[in-house]
Figure 1: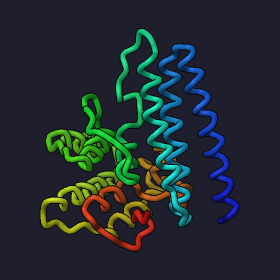
Figure 2 (figure 1 turned 90 degrees about the vertical axis):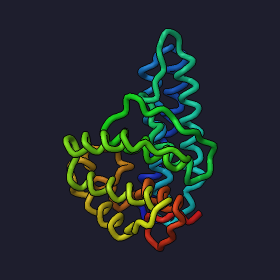
Figure 3 (figure 1 turned 120 degrees about the vertical axis):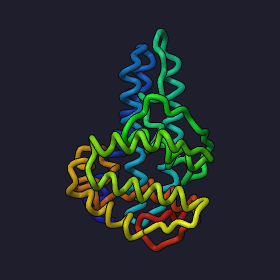
Figure 4 (figure 1 turned 30 degrees about the horizontal axis):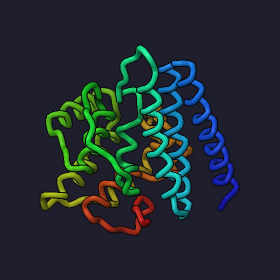
Length: 231
């Protein structure tokens, strides 16, 4: 393991601990927005730990399982806060669904009301892994992504859609396209402005496309790609 990988793992481990403490403090103070912030931050840190381990060739199952567990705990904490209406939009549910599928965690299809653009597309893709796909919502999300996203983002989600269709149709899914799209995220403004887990900028070489991995697992697509689930 290189020193740069070790340093990143150390940083995200520390942030994971802080997010757990922050969630407890926010819940005790009945501060919903702070709890939501720590929910999202805690999911990102735990996801990053798993993705970095994955890209390094180590088994990420424990970290990703913890990511799902923390998200569920955070939701319960947010729901316990008085005089606030909880909404899934304040969490990272659309990303965690992919992780839950990869590690075989208990998960349910969720309501996508209020989601838009790439968040809507992620929500629909995540739900598709558990038996539900919303074609109208997909068309709406893609239309919004074309307006606010980049051509690379559109191409990436079109390849994800091909993987969904391949579950029931004779559609070819390109692993090489997924790999190329992910590599190009390194210099794409849309992904560079997203969370580190999305592979923009210098984080590109440390993480993997967990969305494609989950969809590929769902259709039984095996490959030697760095983005393939092997555990």
